[in-house]
Length: 297
Image (cartoon, rainbow, N blue to C red; front, side):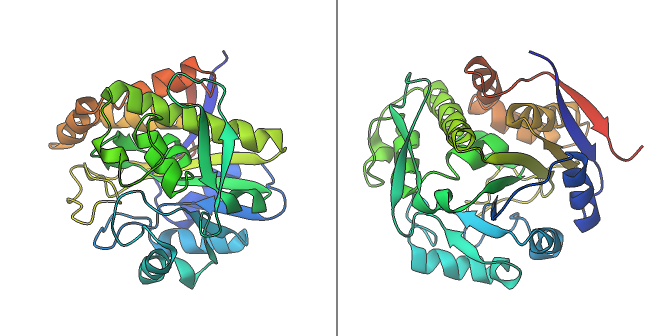
């Protein structure tokens, strides 16, 4: 497989975000959905309105999310939309909690762990998508960026339970007690991410991928007690290939000489996190080989 292109800027600002998007050279069609994490109540690392708001507004985009499998402030529509409002997302765009009105089962092309994927019903209401991820650590996945944002992030509440249990249960009350190997969970996320990509492609809908690498905590934005950043901000990466984009993020974390950057690397490896790009490449979602295009030069 040929190398994918990943565009990079150190400029974490509305202008930098637009520069990264423009470098992709795409014209997204129709109604645009922008998948972000709205962040759990009490978290602090989620992408802020003053960074992404003007970008989303210019595209007339709608913020896309789904309810969480874990019990918290985002496991039902009423509480979730309140958190989205408190975190500023409703100040610049409509917010669609995609599983508010139900869910849809979509096929997977590799049934090793999952027989299908379950996504929010309203995913079908959009013509194009921007997977706008916040790069950071994650207690269960090791790290979260575009692949996690597309798998767990687009899955409905029941779909999240199904991925977290590696296909054993769709019940959010049961999935946490299911037994599985950590590697199987990582692979389940990769399979679900590919299912979404294939499903969109089957309907001639494009997804583009952007990860903002700031507020680099070892914890996810889904953590209500999210820790402080452990290393300096890195920048923004954008690609048409989610595997290459995640790989670029991980490579930059591994290349960092920041004093406490080892804490993020340790979190990733403790959860076998780097396996997600390896497995996603293996099942044909993208490639870990990329050309990094520095937009600041």
